[in-house]
Image (cartoon, rainbow, N blue to C red; front, side, top):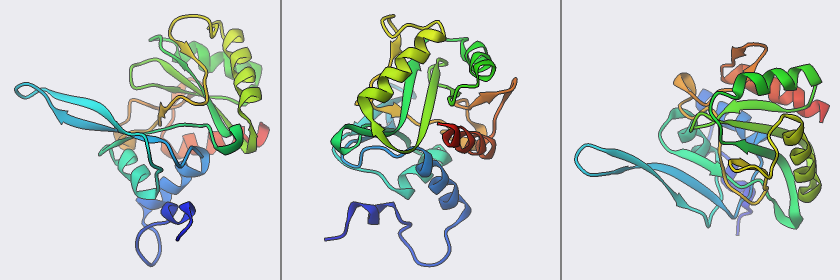
Length: 204
């Protein structure tokens, strides 16, 4: 039986396409559970209404899933928690609109190894990328400390820091995304986000 890592490889021979290359870049940063992941898909509602809903939960993800996310076809949500209660990335979910600019500015001023991205609902996802696996409880504790320092206590409604929760990845429909990283007073395109996240990971 093939290992789960086999599912991370492109499903054809030859050189990867640019889309697959970008998917691999995102997968390198977002290393999540290969037993729990979710898809955010369009469904038909009454009349012409288009709704989005989550599906899945009991399986992993691969290059093609991430490619579809970046292409704006199917959203991908991952669970940070890995086996043995380890993580390679963490996130604080601040479900308050209009906070991306002050949060990103505070992160820059303090020099924290964090990246702020706007969420699907207009709030903020603050990511912490790690170069190796770390204890999920310890990382969550660090994230709760940063959340408090950012003025958003984890005890507040709408502020969540838990590694066993799923989180929608940024850069859905990457070329026209509204789920972008923000740094030094500007929105970042996909490549700039990857470069910043890798730099922050080196500082972690």
